[in-house]
Image (tube, rainbow, N blue to C red; front, side, top):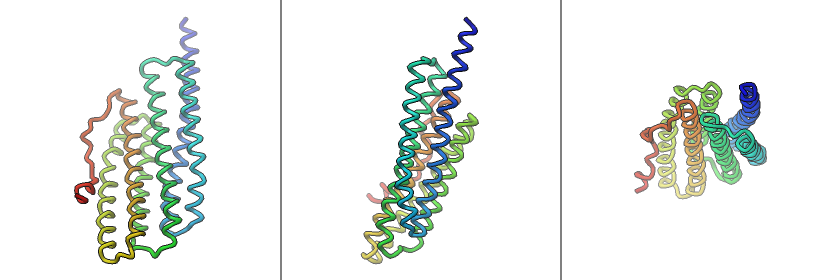
Length: 236
């Protein structure tokens, strides 16, 4: 009987390793998508922007594969307690990665429009720096997942406030540009949507970090994480 349990455990571990390999492949692609989309915007490169849009399909397919494999493991292995928590966390992490990929794709779409207009200040460079900050957060969140490091995950969670502050600064900058010259309105609206996309990427990375904390500790983090997006107040 103990032998059977050991066999089941080893099979589950192998299944989980395969799913985790898909997650890390997906994570690497998403990291690249974030940086490539931001570079395409900064350099006004439509080819890069189009490449980001085309590669999003691969990320979507990996997400479907993770969900399918996770469902198969639950059905066949009937994991209990912590093992089930691991599988459910993998599904949520995959879904968050897929959403981040969607936001990168949206950046690529808007870049195709923006290259037809004059640049607005140094906003594209600022957006690229903001995207880099999110990319580094994602890298650390995935490292925290592999290493089962709740402290690193919490540090990632706290860093989202920095991304929110960058977004707030850009929001104010776009308002200023639109007030100074109405010809900037179209470009600034697209740039604002891109900034919001990057800010939302940060939120999804934060969700990944929270899944890691839940996975390691069994507890969901408190909802008192500092939130730096003040634009709803500013807009009011």
